[in-house]
Image (cartoon, rainbow, N blue to C red; front, side, top):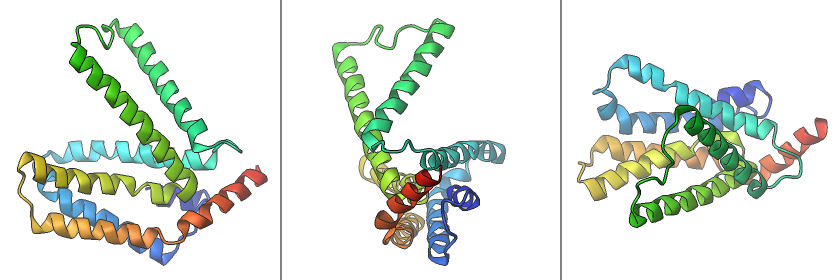
Length: 197
């Protein structure tokens, strides 16, 4: 989805290597998820596609309208503050209790740790987007799925299958195909887009 939107908006050229890499990643994700998807009603699977569609548009919109001269560490905190403000408004509208109400000191410290980890994640996420562009960034979800499957095997005793191994190999191939010199090429193209605007 990200590749299609980026090509349509002129932020990405459709190259066979990139297309093959994205297809390999999609097949890898499918290989890992097929056993889990089979247990879910098809209507919910179709409904769940709204999430990656929204993420794809977000990836491209952030690249297309990245503030000129702004670094990743300028943009990431603003997004987190905006998300926090929206959640605060939601809590006020629903009269929900404060997030820390009734939490033990141990639970509160875990929440704070999660906030710190999320903040570091968004800093790295936006740095990758600024350096490599929306299409390469979209592979983060593939990596997270493969990593999560591995953690399920190591920590939760899930059974590893040949499909999971094939899926992980396809995801690695996808990153290699889509990556390459992208890290050096995209920033200059972003700068040209800013100069045009």
